[in-house]
Length: 152
Image (cartoon, rainbow, N blue to C red; front, side, top):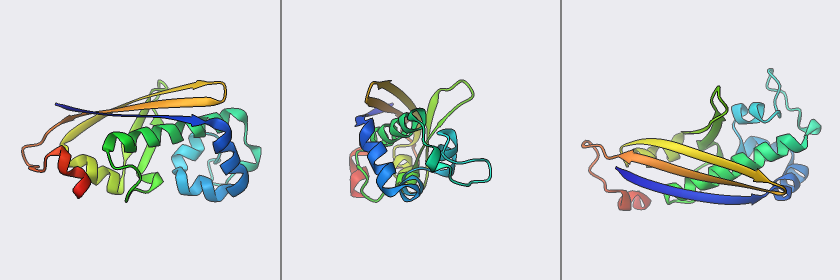
């Protein structure tokens, strides 16, 4: 088993400033519809309710930003070739955060074999932090070693 780790800290007012400046454009570029809905920024008809941004919503969006950053750091690629929405952060029915990879991010992680992701998010004052761990079991069908991932 191989273990990959990423962590990130976010200054929440920075995310608020991006939301104030770019509004829905920022939301749609960075967050999937499911993430926006979970953070209170989409209603059930997929209509934006950004104008009603609460401190809680902003904190949740900032936490997801930190989690996305932590995941791409664990991947070892940064955002190179990965869209923001390729890394999706959701919560299960118990509130436990989990990650779903799409597109290029999923393709890059698949090189490592079968990966289980763990996320931890924490908020305190104007900061939030996230840690992402990928626990990967190499696949016999995949001869590319992890150190070659960044060359793909």
